[in-house]
Image 1: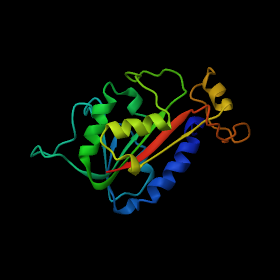
Image 2 (image 1 turned 180 degrees about the vertical axis):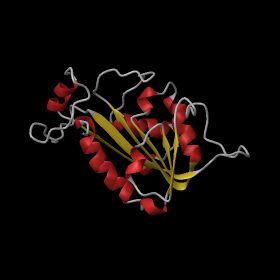
Image 3 (image 1 turned 60 degrees about the vertical axis):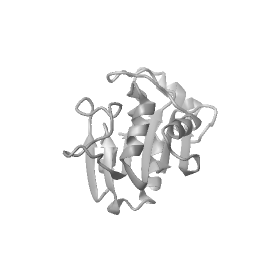
Image 4 (image 1 turned 30 degrees about the vertical axis):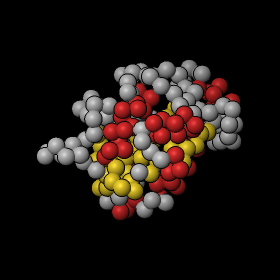
Length: 185
C-alpha cells in the first residue's frame, strides 16, 4: 500500500533518478530505504541516531569525507534540527557532478519521529538548496497536492492510502502536499 501523499512524488522522482543511470552510481541514503527500489552500483544507508547528518559529513576511517554520486533523503529533512547545516554536509559528500535528491511533506499532520521541525514548498526547497551551496541553475524542484488529498490528510486514518477509485492525482499548485527536488553539484 502506498501513501496518497507520495504517489505523484515517487512517480516523478523515479524518472529523475532513472535519467541519471542508476546502475553506475554509488549512492548513500540518509535515514531511509526508498533507494532500495533501484539497482545502484552501490547503496549504503545511514540512519539516525547512529549517524546525524546535521553533525557533519560521513567520514572514512582515515577521517576523509566519504563521497557519492547520489545522496537520497526521503521524508527526512523535516525532522532535522539544523537542515541548512545538513544540506551543506550533503553537498560536501557529493562528487563533482553528483546529485542530491530530497523529498519532504508540506501539508500533513505533525509527526514527531523524534522531532517535526520544518515544511517546504518547491520554492522553499530550492532556497534551502541554494543556501546549502548548490547553484540555482542546477536545481530542479517540484511539488504536488490537491484539496482532496489535503482533506484526506486531516482524517483519522493517517497517512491516507492511495485509492485510485477516489483519489485524483491532479495537481493544484495552491494546495501542495509534498515537495521534492534534485540538485547537482
